[in-house]
Image 1 (cartoon, one colour):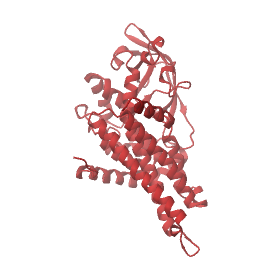
Image 2 (cartoon, one colour):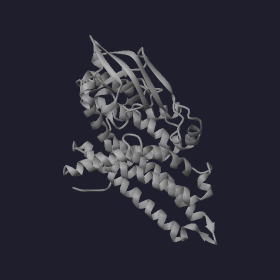
Image 3 (spheres, one colour):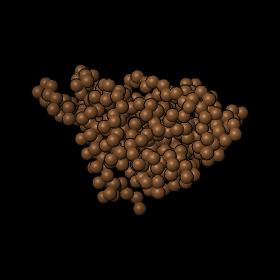
Image 4 (cartoon, one colour):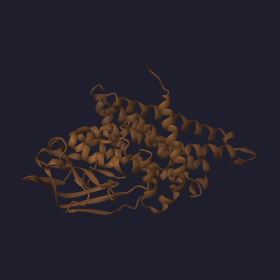
Length: 381
């Protein structure tokens, strides 16, 4: 039966997550945006609420949340702060390759530790010369006896500066291109692994992104997920599942800016009346509202499909593209509605606008998402 309402349990989770965002994230969002410091206090609280370990299966000691539950929570976290949301959400991104391909023993070892205390993992796919083109990656893992020897550089690794382990995608057979890619778990502190300095970013400054340098880094062969050559498939399946959480982040950031702009338009008096009375302003807000509502439904559809085992490559790409484009459009319009105040750091909309931009870029740029959508519709999906 088709329905558009959340269950009582889901509504309760949404309210709980909103309370977390309102009381714990929002009060410090500006501080961490300005300093770029690691928000240990926020992440400790996020663990206590079950958000850092949300996707850890129950058999590994976690709550085993669904992607729908993850989307509901992520919208609220992003409403609080786009950067802090990204660091919390990215833990689930890093865990998903293991949910897809790890053995029971690997899941218990690597996911179990995240369920026990506030720990981070990092998804490491992008390289300086290979972003969307996963088949062009040069990071190499060469098998020697019972070890892999890893050499190469990774970039834009979210949580990489603080991760306890990395889901590393690298080439084990360069002659096969993307089909020669594998996924290997690399523990923090592995000899030969050097973590670079944090990026100085335009937005989402509260999140941590670094480069990783591998110089003859050795890891045991039992850290391989699945089989050699499965890396590209694991990466694509991972992104199909997690893009709903990115879309949810877009909804949350857009909603935050929309609420501020709406309240401002109702209370800002010009020419003897609220600026909302001007059709030019009220129609902007109407367009913002309709895009947010549509984005949320697309997000829920993509998450629901994952939870029900339905292939959602097209739907997750549509949701991610539409919702994050919406976030950029809505936050830009919110700044415009506030005028000079919108450009000031006295209001949060300028931060929302800066945070929104990265959502259009990570986990596959929106241009790549359009390629995915085009390929899917060409195939009749």
